[in-house]
Length: 316
Image 1 (cartoon, rainbow, N blue to C red):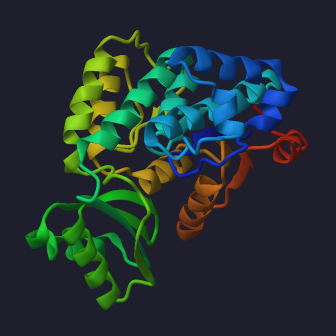
Image 2 (tube, rainbow, N blue to C red):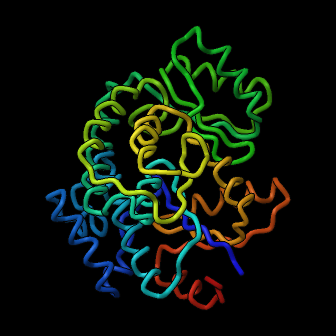
């Protein structure tokens, strides 16, 4: 029997046209887009499928758009009888995993992530923060680069994505110094990323505090399906852990590699990435291969790979 994990992508996976196949072919997917449109007073179909005003790039729009596309596809999979034993998501994607687990409703989640995006964007003035991707160094080496750059300001590890792939975040000069040192000690690649804010570092602590006030007003349930949290790569045990976990997630490191390893250790041998892009599919493959683990990985973002998944005999 397969142990199946549903995983959901984060910000950066978006593209114009995401989710349209499902919107056009399934009433359940269309209803998710319509609910999102009502909740945040924005035509979500137009934003995701056409984006005539180039609004999708704005963080406060990107986050609800990716969540909507992901949950629309999820509903179709569930209708087909495809389900999971455990779930997780990368940063923003964790909200989709919490919706899957019935921790809170999709309607509440789409409103919440729009606010989350706005808080994250506005917390640090443009031009003060930066992020960079570093490839080919281990965590100890990354730590050395960061430690030797702190004289220039705040810099922290934002994402541990997979073995040899880390993202750092912080004040511009400190991030630039980290990139420089990483190159000097043998990084295969170290480049600044085209982002609008320094996500997942202490500069965004205030954004987390603002989000916490919104979370306090939500109806939150115990997880119906095990959820692996980003901040500690552990199973969310009760609803009491939800709010502090999501507050900390904004300004703490995303432990995606650790989360994947935890799911594999718990017997997961099939990962299904649900939503736009194939970023997680790539990261999971690298993590599994580095640990000598054989797993099946699928992504579902359009009708072609949806039909491909349906052709596979998944024991659920």
